[in-house]
Structure formats: structure tokens, C-alpha cells
Image 1 (cartoon, rainbow, N blue to C red):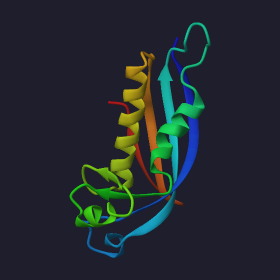
Image 2 (image 1 turned 90 degrees about the vertical axis):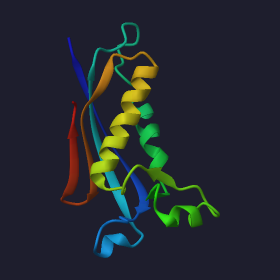
Image 3 (image 1 turned 60 degrees about the vertical axis):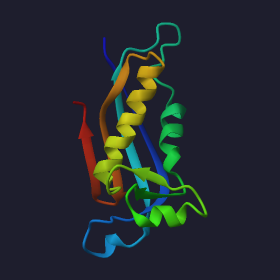
Image 4 (image 1 turned 180 degrees about the vertical axis):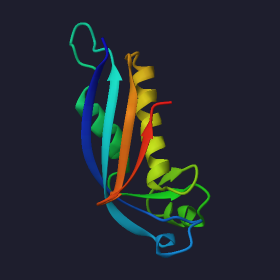
Length: 135
């Protein structure tokens, strides 16, 4: 039997879209919301699929951070003051959804959990989200 759990969490972070033409090319911040649906088989002993706090902790790597494309020249300058979170491409809500999904799936695989992200939504603002479904 497959079980599905849901977790919603939030983080505050700034980003900029280096390859975007418009105001989002400037460093700015959001209160991001993340919704995650995880499918799998709960642990036989605990009957837990994955601890909700683990999901939150994995996503919290972004909290109160500056998220930049690893090729952004701003990343090198900022690194003198703090370590930014670097992404393989501009840190759009679409890219963050894939990145968070991959982090969660990697954790589950490395910890031998029979669980994987079925769906994830990353809300950049009210009314604007990117959604990624399981492959």
C-alpha cells in the first residue's frame, strides 16, 4: 500500500535572475512557500514515511540566504561576507522546485527509505508557483 504525506513550510530568501530582463534581475527577496507531497511505504516499525521535521530541515538550507546562479559574478563578491546558496542556473521557482525535490529524494535514497517526492510546489509569491511532478 502506498502512503502519501503532505508538508507545507516557508523560508525567507533573496535571489536574482541574472539572465532575466526586468526588475527580477536585481537582488530582491521573497517569503517563499513550499508544498511537498511524498509517496512511499512507511517504516514497518515506526509507521512513519518520513519525519515532517526532516522535510523542513532540508528546505531550511535556503532560509535567510542569498540564492544565486553559480555563474553570477555577484556570488564571488558576496562570498567575502557570507556563503550564498548556489544553483546550476538562475534560481527561479521552477529551478528551486527541482533542487528541493532532488535534495529530498537523495535524503530518502541515502537513508534507505521507500519514499520519493510525488509533487512539489514552490510559491514565489501569492498566486505564483512552480510545480514539479515525479518523473
